[in-house]
Length: 138
Ligand code: SME
Image (cartoon, rainbow, N blue to C red; front, side, top):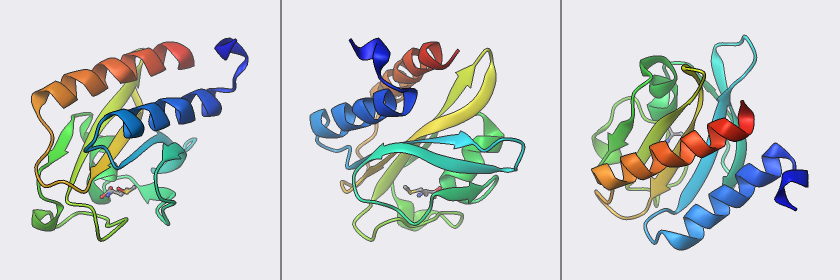
């Protein structure tokens, strides 16, 4: 019964499901705002471990989404000034904020080793994923 699994374990299963089933999703993780600190903290993920488990608001693609409350699609990470590299194999990134009761509490972050792979279909799909996660967390 999946309802007995911890939130972290259920999020990890979602990350693994996404990474294993979408060919151009090479790293999938959830970051959440860390208490009342102005930073994000990495929660569950699938893919290679990253050094960037804490990201200050405003820093990198993730930190910008923490303050913008908007999806951020990056077709070419090399063209971004405010970008935190996790792996030299990464070519593109998408970050979609996660809202609970209208509040931006975190985000799903996906890295791709394929250049310019993300479309509006990914945005709509990941918004839907986050709505499901929101209902787990609410
Ligand atoms: N590239 C992100 C950092 C997180 S890693 O992708 C896992 C950023 O620029 O915020």
